[in-house]
Amino acid sequence: MRYLIVGCGRVGSTLAKLLDADGHEVIVVDEDPNAFKRLGQKFKGHVVVGTGIDYDVLKHAGAAQAGGFVAVTNGDNRNVMAALIAQRMFHIKKIVARIYDPTRGMMYRELGIDTVCPTTTGAKMIRDVLMEAPWDTLQSFDFGNVTSLTATVGSSDAGKRVSDFERAGRIRIAAIRTGKSVRVAANDTVLAEGDEINAIVAPEAISEFAQTFAGARIPEKVG
Image 1 (spheres, helix red, strand yellow):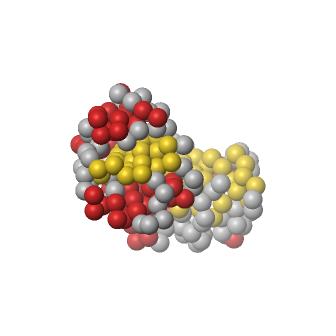
Image 2: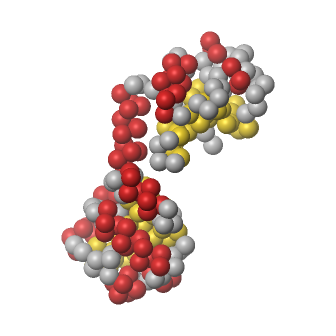
């Protein structure tokens, strides 16, 4: 598949190399020719010098045939403008824009543009390390209103049922992994030591969730 990346900074260049290594056709657009040095000598894709908010530049870069578009320049406005051009003028199906402002990210997502917010993601990761949290933060839904967390069941909680941990409107256990087997959780499911649970947790219940699994190890991601 052809992917078009606007912005060849640390994130853009790293993403380009990952997609290139996976065998995809990658085109990188940046105003600064020196930025392409980050791609290294092994990069087999193409580069285009120019701004990602110029229709002609994107057309020259092959946007009309792109299956995916990513905007990761240093400016939110530029990323959104580039994404909107890709969406409305080139009709690219999959578009992702990096947005540092969480509130603006919500607004742009309502326009049909997927956004990634390093501000929110980074803050949550730092919080988890700071608190030595016994969970692994996965994707957040509705921009922070609900968070998906995983934790490992310790010996003190073995033998309890899923319903013992759930709190109406606050904590809902969605899935359980035992070894390599993943199943949807039921209220009467009995948990065993070492089981990994995936829970949907409201912000006000994160502390309660942390206390419940204080003795559990930091888990691997489910799935």
